[in-house]
Length: 346
Ligand SMILES: C[S@@+](CC[C@H](N)C(=O)[O-])C[C@H]1O[C@@H](n2cnc3c(N)ncnc32)[C@H](O)[C@@H]1O
Ligand code: SF4
Ligand code: SF4
Image (cartoon, rainbow, N blue to C red; front, side, top):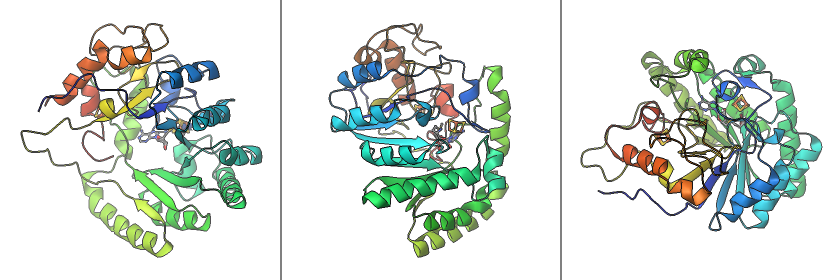
């Protein structure tokens, strides 16, 4: 079935407020990223919102820690005042009591807290530079502020499932229940970074990810842990979202569309203004549709040189069209072939 290569601007966008982080999680590429690392100014943020008048949902997070941005809550406030539903994802290490209150008063609709373990040993081995005790203190601050205000702020936890933390899943559910967090999203590693010509700076992370990913002979045990987790989640009334353990079967031919719809349905911008096909790519040195702020894009693109232009021009530009065309084919680009969303395991 033919697909359009120039879809209308989507109602969902993800914008990275800042491209750096105070932590060094083992599976994350943030500290090795080879594209421009910057902070999005509040002025540029407003310009971006102006260029997306139909925007309904904004996920204010990219590759980096959103709360490192000094104007993070002003951005939330600005977007929510326009009637946009704003969500974020945070490591929660920087949450002061004042910021816990801003989470409520800024109009933030949803906050996802990364918790990759239920014990200090497992959590801190993955989330280097973080203190498990401080993050739990901060989680307490957040839910206390929510409950004191009678706020509808959605608070959920996100766990990246790996061989080292699989067995902590039931304990994590108990911990979340104790902290009055009603939802846990468990996701797999996003990418095996098995891209040909991967820049050498990513190789240590690729090796970590390869080792951390569940193997075929872990799956039976993982199914048993998942069964126990489902039972416990029901008992504790925690909403639990578990990932697929095996890749999705290849859909029969002819397919009725691309295997992934991200570059049609959602728009992703780095703090430096690079438009990427999706959040899974995360850095413009892997692929980019070009820069929306008029400077030359940092990375290689499937459509040739990265051109400059406004947001709509980049969304409909040659690089975006070439990427969508490749994704709609049976043989996608290497960046997609190594992506967990492409295989349905995320
Ligand atoms: C890149 S972080 C940015 C927001 C914030 N710094 C945080 O950690 O929540 C967003 C989410 O991606 C997850 N993440 C990082 N590296 C990942 C990987 N290789 N595979 C899957 N998820 C990953 C993090 O655990 C976090 O939940
Ligand atoms: S996962 Fe989040 S907290 Fe960890 S290093 Fe990456 S951006 Fe920072
Ligand atoms: S398959 Fe993965 S890498 Fe490719 S566009 Fe979709 S989410 Fe991005």
